[in-house]
Each structure stands twice: as structure tokens, then as C-alpha cells.
Length: 99
Length: 156
Image (cartoon, rainbow over all chains, first blue to last red; front, side, top):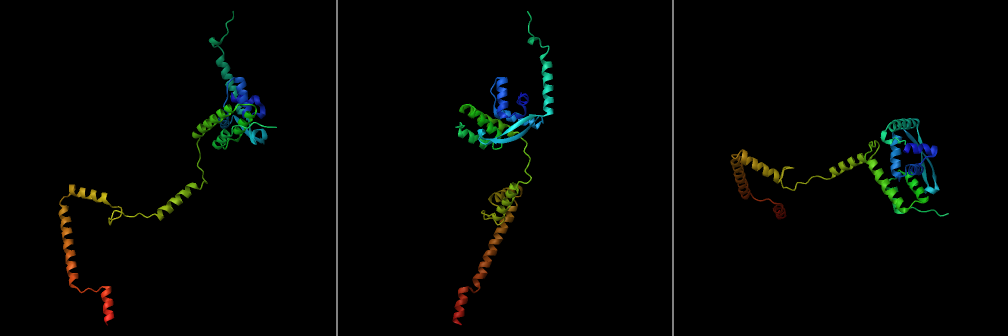
């Protein structure tokens, strides 16, 4: 979910934006600390890279940390999509009944 | 233009607990300024502290190869050892051999070789007799104390 949220944010994806993206699309509250922990792990697996921006006054002079999905991360997302789609297909309980 | 200030205590707690996570603190401040409540801010701060603390507790921390602290500790410990000398408070002439050592030795001797007590008794008796002989022989010799020597010098 975090990888997708970063992708949706483009090159300017940062903590607040990722959290809002997940809250809006996923419909649940997000902990910013948990987002950062997850992103740190993804960065450790080289699926995401980060860069620090300039400090801005609306953040009390604190810098933003922008995230970008790496080609390796993009490949991982596609693999996950393929796996999920194959899991979704041919599940009888999920098939709509035609009347 | 006035900006909303997040709860000071929560902010101070977060900055204290996570000094390296400036972007996270900035994100929380920004979200608060966009209209989040103080309760939300507190909840995020406490959760962030818990999450970060939990994550760090499992981190593998490499040793600081240039950290002078351990060497300093060793140096101070050696200096302290050199300054403090052990004092024998047991009145035993042998260092590191006190009352417990004597008791163990006596118990061992009584159990393992009781005949050694005769040797001890003989040694003590001969020592006492030797001491008495020395006292008697000294009593017969004229005393030449420092005071007596001064008195003799004055008389000459």
C-alpha cells in the first residue's frame, strides 16, 4: 500500500501525503510513525529511495523527506499485482451470481 | 498570519525521543496546522515514539570504532585500582587470609589430622618458654635506655 501511495504521489511524495493517500483510498487512520518505519524498511530493501528537501516555515523550519519508488520497487509492485490478480480469479465465493 | 501551535509538551517529547526524525516531526506539525486536533497530535506522537522505540530495539548497532569512551573507562578503572590499596583489617599477618581462612584451616586440621594439634601445642609451649627465658636474661642485664645514657653523659 505504501509503495502504491508513493507512486501515486509522484516525485514529491512525502509523509503527510502518503498518509493522506492511504487514509482516503484505504478508509482507515494511519500512524505517521508507522509510515516512516515501513518506508525505512522498504528503503533497506532498495525498493524506495529518499532525499531530504529544504526546511519550510509551515513545518516549523523542518525539512521534508521525499520518497521515490526504485525500478526494483516497481517490479515488486507488478509482481504483487500479478499474484493478487491470480489469487482473486476463480474464487467461487467472490463470483457474482447472474440472475 | 497566525499559525496553530501544536501541543508544546508533545512536540518536546517527540523531539527528545526521536532527535534524528526531523521529517516525521515536520510532517506532524504540518498535519496539525492543516486542522488536525490536539488529541490526534498526542496520539500520533505517542504512537510514533512507541513504533520508533520498538524498531530501534531490534536494530543491529555496529560498534563505534573511534568511540573513546570504553578506553577512557578502562584508563579510569586502572587509575582507581592503583590509587586504592587493600588494607588488612583482620590482624592476620598473611595478606588475604583472615578469620574465615583460619576457621577453615582449624576445621580441616581437626578432621583430617588431629595429631597436628600436639605439634601446635608443643610449638606454643616452646615459644612461651623461649619468651620467658628472653625476659629473664634481659632482666639480669643492666638497662641502657636513652634516658640512662643521657644521665651518664651529664655525670661525666
